[in-house]
Length: 154
Image: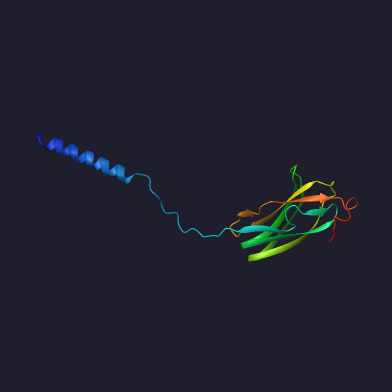
């Protein structure tokens, strides 16, 4: 049995057209992943001490950290500017999400020489387990027995 002469080109045209349509359907496209929870970012601030403030060596000092947004925990970290040593770190966790909260931590400033710089950062954790960091606040340590007029103890 032989095919008519015009049947072969029609068959090839339909195979080529079907192949082209299959390739268009198999291209990359955005696929649904299910509902995604919308969580707003949290802004963290260190309210106290302020940038370039003098802090007395071996004295108690308030560190106030504020979270603008919903958090389940707030902490602060105090490190030395020149080396990666962590001098103080404290965390407060909440039983439920808190929105727009300030926490005061009472911290002992390390007994360092005058001129040592400390970096303080506030950290907030949201209910998704994401961490948000404040801008670093750099303070300068002074020895109170050498500079009594500049050193105010709390």
